[in-house]
Length: 212
Image (cartoon, rainbow, N blue to C red):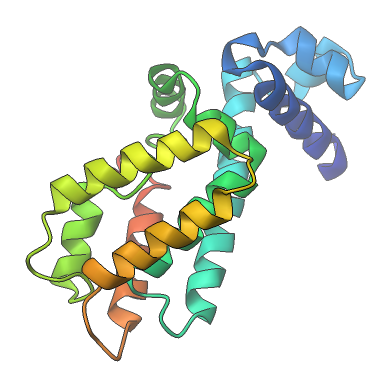
């Protein structure tokens, strides 16, 4: 099967996950959506799990590339507020990623670990360990409690995702950006250490044992 045929299968799986949920996806449904036979699907992917891992890897690699490009172009892109804005906007703007965040996380994680794909589906908001790394890089103010901030961002971001897309999403994102900028970001001129920290964090998510 050529590259276009592969993309058709992954697009079909993406459509089904987005429209009907993770548990509704099957080889017969993917074959029907892609206008192919089940044998054609299985000739390229040995199992449904293999196909789904390829779908997830393609989607998350595209997401991380977009986020990293945005951060790199932004002179202030290494600050937590900027990283958060680009990350959350990227999630909200990709229907498949948003659907995956709201899916059965345990099921997704089991598939990813068993097939050596991504170690886990990244959580909404910012993980405590990443915020601590940003503090060490001098990008986050020393007094910030990383665990508390991570919990708040996760709750707020997940709530916004449940109602996305909606007319006030941009206002929510900008409001969170302003709050982080005013109360969390360190007062620094050079934000390149934050960019390096985020690249290392993103790379850790693409390894079988990565935990971000």
